[in-house]
Length: 323
Ligand code: XMP
Image 1 (spheres, rainbow, N blue to C red):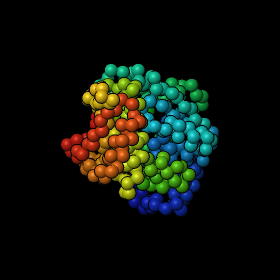
Image 2 (image 1 turned 135 degrees about the vertical axis):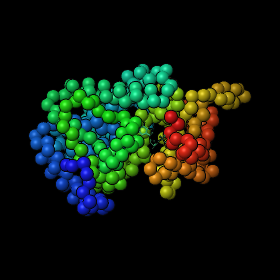
Image 3 (image 1 turned 90 degrees about the horizontal axis):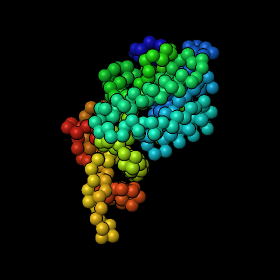
Image 4 (image 1 turned 180 degrees about the vertical axis):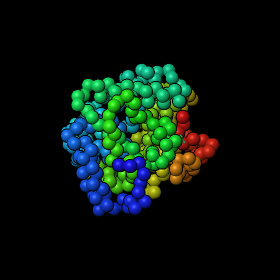
């Protein structure tokens, strides 16, 4: 398949067109792979999930998926990958619990780009180790989509985690590389993937690692994961929901008071933005009652947090993520 989308290629907007695309891709994948075996890094993001579902349909258990849990995923994500792919779709899925490995490497590292580099490099190492344990792999599945090709300097290429080892001598299988994101979603739905996977919020490759600001500690990471689940549940009720919404926990403490005793605790920062291309973004006005509900739920249930803030900054000058 060439890397240029033909002008005549119809935009996939309906179930019918998605079914046709799926049928064609199954045929193409079978032609390319023959009786070979494919390896795929399955993050649980929409692109790699759609590629996994397509490959399962095309070649069944000759696909091996590797899901690396680096400890920086959102609440429930590794569990969902296992449930959907191993239990429901019958995928040959290797789940790698690499949480300690990543968090040990990240201990004490506060500089954001260094954190990104460590996460990216460790991911490659873990994946390469898993690949070395497997026999007969000839192909590497990848969730490249058309904007990745067009904007080779875009966000994904720029700071992507999940870039794979260059010395893995595998031929690439990239069945959605000519599709735009909205088309990938239509195809994902047609393949029967759950809505919360297909319409997943954009999530940075380094995950909660860049939302646990500064040097990551396990307790603050757990706090940001719990608070994030609350923020996503509440803001997700808005119609239309903002383009991206999440929270971060800065690496400072401030004073709280409970039962007449003063103590130091963390602050959760809520952020919700709208954007077209993530290059500029504007803060979204959140209803006061929603903010109060989020505040109450976080303060009542997330250990260590005694303050809730709302980040109303636009990009520029503030980036969308805190790091
Ligand atoms: P910023 O913070 O640069 O974010 O305004 C723009 C968009 O990119 C996402 N982002 C990342 N995505 N790896 C990614 O795959 C990263 O390291 C990364 N950093 C930021 C961010 O969530 C937003 O959607």
